[in-house]
Image 1 (cartoon, one colour):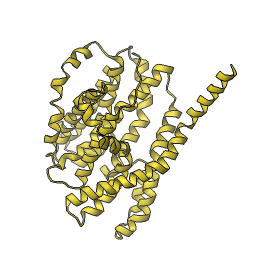
Image 2 (tube, helix red, strand yellow):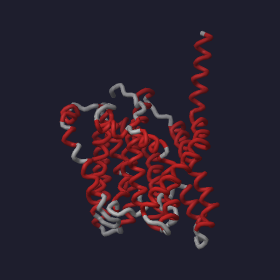
Image 3 (spheres, rainbow, N blue to C red):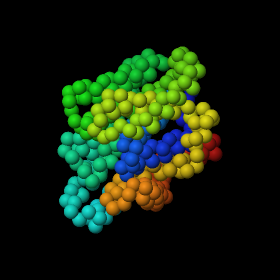
Length: 356
């Protein structure tokens, strides 16, 4: 592997900001944005890229992965904010929707990260429909690190990208298989096994960035032509829910477009990079996890009585405010605990160096 270090890139937060806006537009039922639910796939590709980059970097440095450290860090980053949101939901939802009788059941399914298969086959959780994507990502976090190590052990040096490319193709083919079997749209849309292709697409890019096969340079010279692919995303906004074209080719187009955008911002210069590093998008991207948690019940409540412009503006403002409250309190506290072992190790190393 080549020497590679994953450094902070504000444009990636900007891309998260765009993705969360698209998701909110979809749930607010904004006209001409029926297909904005595809914004979730931007999250998937980005998550696959970042997680795999970190795992490969760790393997490059130590020839092994510290699974406990990985899962511990994921727990402290994701679970405190989720539990805070679910606790608030259990307290407030009965006041907003007195007729709901599955509030605690939905919260439990969400906390256990079972929402993807729960929604696909059992219509639960219904009032926390957006929890499905968090479950998909959590299942990826569980299975991908050991599988990645297995691939690294079994493949030749510099050839990991081939194995991940094969997994991406097989994952897409698996989704097409169920379309061909006549399975319902929602049964395919929400499941981890049929939605893992976006995460694998991001993982493929991480492997290519690190391994740099010989053909990459020739492809990079033609990247300006590939920028037409992201321009197709607005056309996909007209794809409506329950349209199997989303499953057949729509998701693949979005995944490829997301890959092009990620490549375009990696050099941290140029027009695309400057677009995504806009301060508003970067700040929204930093809060995107919390915004995603809070926005759905907020938007669901508002859209029952207000027109979509009010739902979008008020829903985004309320969601950002709640997300900021969570981010600067419990999430900051959790991240300090997440990073505590590293700080202790650094302090010990400093003491040892001083003593030496």
